[in-house]
Figure 1: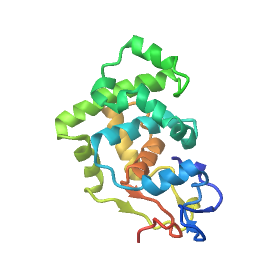
Figure 2: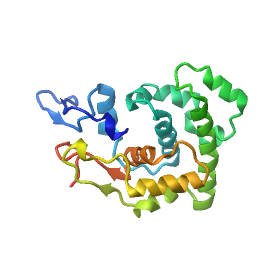
Figure 3: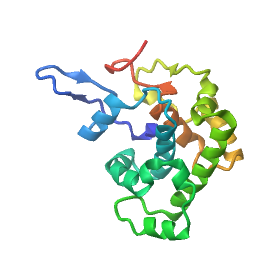
Figure 4: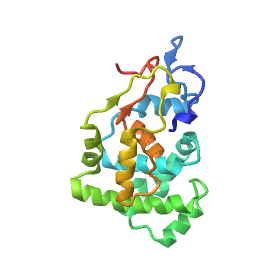
Amino acid sequence: MYAAERQLSFYGGTGMEDQKIERCSWATTDLYQEYHDKEWGKPVHNDDKLFEMLILEGMQAGLSWLTILNKRESFRAAFDQFDCRKVALYDEAKIDELMRNEKIVRNRLKIKSAITNAQQFIKIQEEYGSFDSFLWAYVENQPINNHIHSEDELPATTPLSDKISKDLKKRGFKFVGSTIIYAYMQAVGMVNDHVKNCFLYQS
């Protein structure tokens, strides 16, 4: 999710009656709250999940993250549960099939980029043993815990997201600009950007 989407402080419940839970201000719907509480900022080391989030972040470009979350199960069904080895083999007939699928983002460039990224993802797995090993080496296998008071302080990019973006582009990945990569780093827990008044903030 891009920092520009985060607006308005919000207090919501998580099933605990008469107790208010303070969250990051962008968690303004039930779906956002579930994603915020269970996934965002939590370290991910499973390659299948890392691939899924990379593709979904690319699919988000120009759209809201809520749009992607609403279509997430449809994406999983359409893209073989984000099995990178299956996605890497998609041909023009499969692309045409996906373009007819009204339940996902029907953007030919994004769909083709998912195939390209699957192919490059596999190459990294073969080179490093896992994509997890490659990716988390950028932060020495330790999440970066930022100390953010307000979403206004959150950057859209950082020097590290610039570097990862540049490295992935050199390897042939598509839709991996620095803004997308920083959102990806947040999504897979490489960076923890929960604000200090959020119940998930870690000092």
